[in-house]
Image (tube, rainbow, N blue to C red; front, side, top):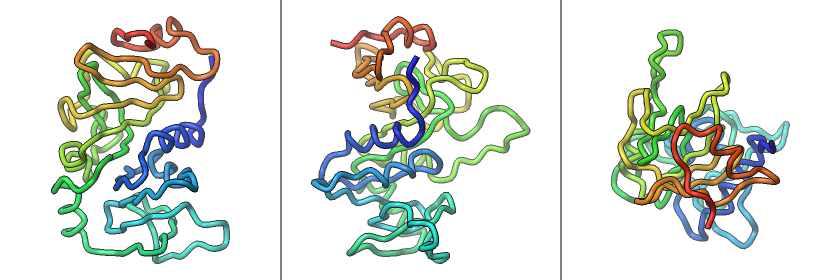
Length: 213
């Protein structure tokens, strides 16, 4: 089966972000999305630690130690960008000013529940950050994650087994195998990557999928 790498997954997410959108990129794989804005779009990326108009990652040797995102990664600032404190940043997140939030996830349920802050494993302390604020504050929530975990177990399930970040908040799931929409009728496969078949992806999913239209 074809599995996209993280860079390819980020590029695929970027294709679905419309021109003029204000978008928060969560910690981890979502931050890579800022590297893939096509030249015919203006997308304003927000970072939780207080940056608006985040640009692509800097070239090696051009890092500014004073300019990092919420994941402590070096970033650039696009023309017209600005900085502000956490209070203003969370007001943007909670106030409905973001068109899209792109977050990672441990699990997503068939009805769009999101679990991305705790795994019930004491070895990995929970870290919610601003995920709950984004899950309810952004107008749309995209999830980008691998289709299965390190043990090969499905991360898309009928019901999440980890503590929830938000209920019914996810609209679209981007994995390394496919793009899937959460709809009132169920999980609708929008795109299968490469030669991946519906049956192959279904076998690695812990919830019933609807085939591409």
